[in-house]
Amino acid sequence: MTKASIEAAQKKFGAVVEEQLKRVEEMKKSGAFIDYAKLSPVIIGICWGDGIGEFISRNAQEVLTHALKEEVKRGKIAFKEIKGLTIENRVKHKKAIPDDILEELKACHIILKGPTTTPQAGDPWPNIESANVAMRRALDLFANVRPVKIPREGVDWCFFRENTEGAYILGSKGFDVGEDLSVDFTVATEQGSERIIRMAFDYARKNNIDRVTVITKSNVIKTTDGRFSRAAKRIAKDYPAIECDEWYIDIMTAKLIDPARRKDFKVMVMPNLYGDILTDEAAQLQGGVGTAGSANIGTRWAMFEAIHGSAPRMVKEGRAQYADPSSMIRACAMLLRHIGYPQKA
Image (cartoon, rainbow, N blue to C red):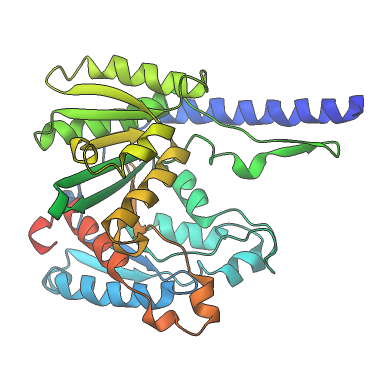
């Protein structure tokens, strides 16, 4: 390894730190959540996505437009189709989200998004960042909220996954140092940790839930997970009626499949990567990843989607039209509750 390689790595690391410090300052300026009752119309953008996304998004769009047809007539709701969030268009522009599409997204208040394809090793596509990760970052959709219910077992979980930090935020900005070393990053900020943890506690209080479980690996990842853990313990003092306990991610994956224990958990909050893994496990217990919807919430925008991918294997086998739209329809129900129409959900 040459001195030049080390100096290049130091320069890249410095740029990453500078970028994240700027993000911290932006979070400090963040305002209150948008009040949809004061908007007329609420603009809902619909992106079909890739693969099976076209089919399940069309099904969901039909359900949503029917549910809100009277509100559309009264000018309270407006729908807008956004067609450029396909892998072909993203590859053409060499961006996770092309600039013109991002502007269309920002012109909406709410987004209903079908699954999008993220290139991986061996794919014919170039290495373009996940559209999901890019959208969450660009719109500051910091809270990924995923409910999972198994009524016959008394399971009623709500997962709060930090959506803009952790191991994913800089996954595309890692670098190689020489031929033998690769470096990626995990990021945690006080502001990012606090806002997702407070959202989980506020949800618990609003729904008369007396326990919030914090999931980390702070016994090993002592800096970033340690910050998340300390923030949770500090914030818990503001909610004396709610118990706060901490579990490590490895044992929690086991406890979710333990019939004697899993019903004890209600609200769970965790950093990004752990939330991605744990919510897929939970959705499988509910009936499969095709049965779970997902909300991505920020103060200014919100995006609702299925939790699964674009299923290229189903497309290759000619079965895309048979994809189960349940996940997207559940996402529509979450969308309706979020904008103030729980009776329609």
